[in-house]
Image (tube, rainbow, N blue to C red; front, side):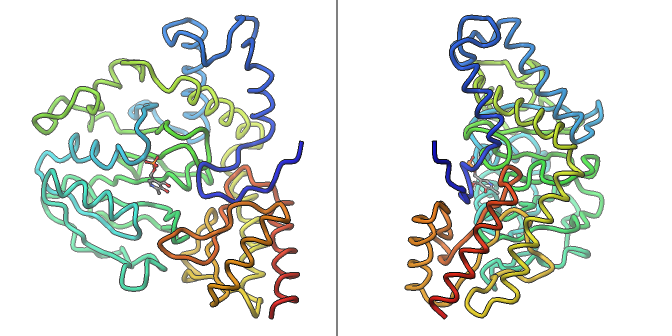
Length: 360
Ligand code: PLP
């Protein structure tokens, strides 16, 4: 078996230990004689799986009782609509647009009410996070929205915006569980799991209790109301059952790794290996303002499209997969999520040094 180092932005690398355990349990989950994929979501066994997943996630983040945890489907993109449909009571919301995903969320919200773009970094291809200490937050805004880690551009909010008392809603898809967070600063934190946590399709929503009401926009489908899923413990209909089971395994892996403080240290170590090299390289250059650099997604360029393409091709041949940058920015991007081992980043930097020596 030859595993590659997979730098994909998502779906992305998962801990080998988790994949092996899932493979062992594939035909017969703990004496049930069937796979979790084949199991009724109404069975006692499955209830234990989803309950344990929630309990472990609550322990990892430190989620207080006044927040609900939902395992939903539709990916992160479904939340772009679900958030305004459920939270836009005044039909006003403020968006900080720091990349394509925040822009899509803002555009979607515009269908349901007045979605104000109160800050943006589009003027410099989203290569930085704007100053969010004193923004023109709307007096009647139902919430302020951010995409906390911008997967495509490799920027991350190092401090949360000053929302002037308004509810903060954050898409954390590409930084979920990569470091400790104070959940009480958020009204809603959500993310697609296909980067740091599990298989695509599952989206986890952590939402403060007072935001879960029946007072949603007229016409909001039952399936798109948070209350529906809260009342049913994420089992209103058939959930993405197998995906949630894998998420649960990743939560246990994270606990074994020492939790979010320990994983942050490891993520900082990995990112430093790559950024330190980028800062000294004569060929490769990071594209993001230093203070806004993401620990998870690291875009870089050579300045020549031809060399970029050569690099991606030769890296692939060397077992370094999916380093091509997003189609909207070009160049390269190394996504180094929780499950990427230090050895993977070291091998990448070693390869970059060799490529530089051969092509400079
Ligand atoms: N938000 C962010 C930050 C993302 O990186 C992505 C996907 O890469 C999405 C949203 C969209 O996720 P999904 O494909 O699950 O809808």
